[in-house]
Image (cartoon, rainbow over all chains, first blue to last red; front, side, top):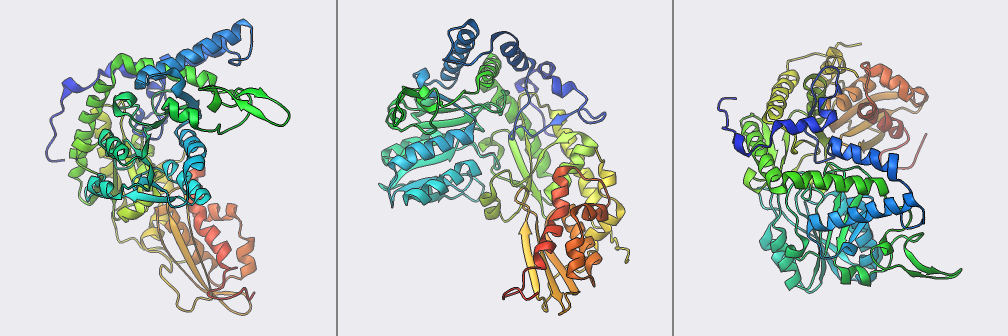
Length: 427
Length: 132
C-alpha cells in the first residue's frame, strides 16, 4: 500500500470493549487471534448477553403467559419487559406493535402471508428492489403466485445506489406495497428510507422495511419514518439467534388475520372454530423464543449504552479506511457506492480469483473470517455479472488493525493464485 | 482444521492452471450442468459415449473456486475411457480421496459438484431420450 489513510482515532470506540466479547479473546483458530469480519451474517455476543441467557435459565425460566407459579410470572414479566425495550429502541408508539418472531425472514413471511394474501389482487403490484436479500424476494414470489399480484423491482444507479427517479416512475396506483432493505447486505448502500416511505405513501402504498442490516448499526425511528412494517433479527445485533421482531402499525396488524395458528394466539376455541387473541399474542402462536427475546433486550441495553450514532461513526471510520486500502489493490472491484453512502460493509471481487480462495486463505493463515459467495443476493450478483464475491463487514468491536490483517491476506492470496505456468503431471 | 498449504497442494493448483479437457465437446452424446446454490460455482460436463457405454471423450466447462474446477479436471482425467458402470460405482468418498487434501464439509460440496454433474450426465443424452 503506497499511501496510508489518516484514521480518525477520536471517532473510534475504545478498544477495551473487546474485553466484553469472550470469543474475540478465545483460541478459535489454532493460535491466530480472531479477526471477525462476518458481522453482516451474524455478530458475536458480549458477556452481558451471555449472562442474560444464563440468568434466565438458572433463575427465571418457565413458559410465558400460562402459569400462575412464580417462575412463569418472572419469565412473563421479563419477556414483556423485553418487548417494551424493543419498542423504546425503535421508537414505536405501543408495545403491542412489537411482535416477536424467529427472525427477519419469519417477520417478512408473516406480512407476506397474512397481509399479502388478504389484500393483494390480480394486477396489484409489489415493488421491491434488485438489491434485496432472498428473504425479501422469495416470500413475494410466493405471494405473487398465490394472488396474481406482480412483483416489480427498482433498478440501481451505476454506482450501486437505488435509482430514485426510476422508483418514482414505477410507483403507481397499482402499487400496494413497497418492500425495501434499509441497508443492502451486499452493496452496503444505505437507502433513503424516509424519502422512499413518503413517496410510497403519496402513491397510496404501504412500506415494509427489511432493517436487518440497519437496526444493529444505525438509529431507527419507526414513528418519524412513518413506516408501516419493519423487520429485524436479534443475532445481527449482539443478541441470540432464533429471535427477531416484526414492527407493524397497530391498525394494520389489527386488520390482518393470524398467520400461524396454535396456542397463545387465541381468545376462545371450540371444536370447529376459534377467535383470535388481541395484539401482540395474535401473531405469537406457540411458545415464543423466551430466553432469546430476553437476551435480545440485554443486547439492546448494551447498544444503547454506547449509542447507535457512536457505533455508526466507528464503523464509518473503518469503512472509509478499508475502502481506501481496497481501492489501491489492482484487479479488485469494489461492489457498491462510495463510503459516504455506505454502512459498515464492503464486498469485492477479482476477475481471476474466486471468493472461496480469499475466504479460505484469510481464515487459515490470517485468522480473518469473511463471507464468500452470493450472500443470499443471487439476482444482484447476476446483475453485476459475477457469481460470487467476498464480503468484509464491521461492527463495534472491529479495529483498523483488522483491516490491516484483511489487506495482508488479500496480498497473500493474490501471490498464491497468480498464474505461474504450472503444468499438470499427466497420468 | 486443514491448513491452506494442505488444501492447495501443488497437484491441485496444477490441475487448476493446466486443466484436463477444459472446453466443449462438439461430438457430445451426453451432457449435464449444475451449480452449487451456496456459492454459485458452476460445472458443465459433456461426454461422448459409444454404444458399449464407454466414455470415449469427456470435457468440462464452468466457473468457480479452485477446488470445484481442479476437482472437475481430476475427475475427467480419471474417467476418460471408463464405462458408465465404472462411473456409477465411483463413490463420493472415492472422489474426495481422488482430490487428496482433507476438506471441511462446506468445501466438500465444492469438490463433489463435478462428481454430481458427472453422475447425472451419463443419464442425460443431448437433445433426445435416454438411449442407454
